[in-house]
Amino acid sequence: MPPRSVVKKFLARPQHEGLGAVVRRSIGRFELRYFDPFLVLDEFSVSAPAGFPDHPHRGFETVTYMLQGAVTHEDFEGHKGTIEAGDIQWMTAGRGIVHSEMPATEGTQKGLQLWINLSSKYKMIQPRYQEISREDIVEAGKDGIKVRIIAGESLGAKSAIYTRTPTIYLDFTLKPGSHLQQPIPKSYNAFVYVLEGEGIFGPHESAVGAHNLLLLGGSGDGLEAWNKSTKPLRFILVGGEPLDEPVAQLGPFVMTTQQEIDQTVEDFDNYINGFEKAKNWRSQARILLDY
Image (cartoon, rainbow, N blue to C red; front, side):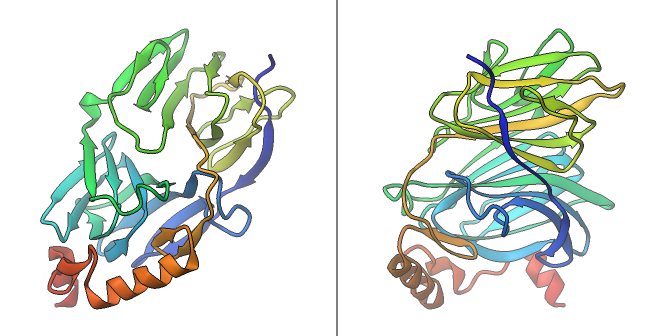
C-alpha cells in the first residue's frame, strides 16, 4: 500500500498570545479549527517578562515540548517544576487546573505546545502530570535517521509515556540523503510539523520548509519522508485516535456541549467542582508581575 499523502499544507504565521509571547499556531486557527483529537498546536517563543501567567484549563491534555531555554510551571495544587530543552510535560487538565507557564532563564525560550482532546468519559477526571527529562526520552537511530520517541514507537523502540487518548508523538532528525518510512496506525489522524530544514513528505510532493503544517490523508501505510537537501531536516510526526465526539470550546475550556461549557464557566466563576483552590491562589510569577 502506498504511503499517506499530504492533503493540506500551510505555513504557521506568528501571532501574539498570553502576556507578550509570540506563537505560530497551526491547529486551532481559522484554517483548521480542529483535527480530531487535536485542538491546538503552537510553536511558541517567549522572553521574560513575557509569558503565560495564571490561566485555567478543563477537558483536555496539554503536551509541552521544550526546544530551547526553559519554562517554569506552577499550579494551584502546589505542583511546580521547570522543563528545559528536550524535556516534556504531559499534563491532563481533566476537571480543572489553574496554572502559569513562565520563562525560567534569560534569553528566548522556544517550544511546542499541543492540546489533545479527552473523551467525554475522561473530561472530569482528576488532573495529573507526567514530566520526562530529556535523558529519559527514548531515542533510536538508523541509516541517517534519529528519532526521539515521546509517545508511541519507532525504529523498534517504544515510549513509556501513557496517553489517555491513544497518541504517537515522534521527533525525527534526518541527515542529508536519508529516507524514512514510519508506520502510522490505520485509524489515526496524523500530521507533520517541520521545525528545521526542508523535506519531501509523501509521494509526488515538493520540498517543504520550517513552520509548515502538513495534514496526512487517512489512507496509506504511514509516512514516507526524504531529505534531499544539504542540511539536516527536523520535524515532528503526531497522530491520534479520533474521538468522533462533538466539540464545544470556549478558550481554555473544551467540553462536548454548550451546556457543559456554561457549567464550566459557572464552576470557574464560583470556585466549585474542581476550581475550589483558584479562589485564593496566585502563582509566584503572578505575584512578581503585580508588584
